[in-house]
Image (cartoon, rainbow, N blue to C red):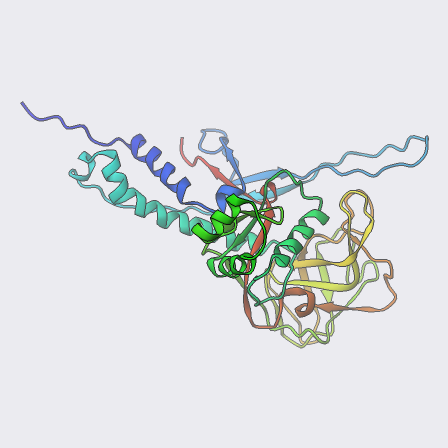
Length: 360
């Protein structure tokens, strides 16, 4: 009579692999992770694109006379465009191992490698969409002030303060900050983490995380001494259009995806009251751009400059009074043709990664 051996089943392997993968993730565990069951169903394919509904915004009337407004919902397209995997062959001997043995010998190193790749792609892609910067490019954070300034940016953007604010550093930034904070008073549990584990747990209203997948953004060849923007409506900036036209650059210079810059006289606003803040609005280039021979370049940006209404994002009190200076280095991404690591302070629901079933 032939022997009948119990072998590992695909479901056993998948469940174990997912558990290991989840434990290996750092950054992704702290952001919004949506699951969409519309994928992988016969007759229900959506082409790999999800429509994410933006929050509704409204204006407030003053007085007793009703002033109705239309509710116009907008969406953003989130494309599920990346497939990743690690493929191996299993021998009959490996399939007779216990699940724990198989996990230790095969699944753990596989999932560690896959987790690193997923996190690296997610951090790199999301970093290039962030338009708020604090600190000095190229300077490793070494004081609590950098974290506090990041917290200010989150608060100015009306980020909820419900314990889901995070700060992502690499080991060098974490070490420098821990050393700087060693003489300060903190709760016993946080001091324990600093001295025994080498990182800050909770400080400045942020949950601190450490990852070696921190992304760098390499700046273009642009010049920061000559570019200007005509702030007249419909010229350099058109309300509701996600581009900014810049002139007086050097011919053929580049502005790279992920670079941050400001325009003189273009101020950030409170997202709810629309009252102008005292600081300039920062914009991030969402695609590479190259100046023409005449030094003109149109840059796709986020946020979209909107000068009035419920979705207003900027205030331009002196619009049209002259050519406003564009600052790409000062107050932005730093020196031209240079790459700088970009640490992240963020709220959980500001960033999202979507996973989906590919097969039924």
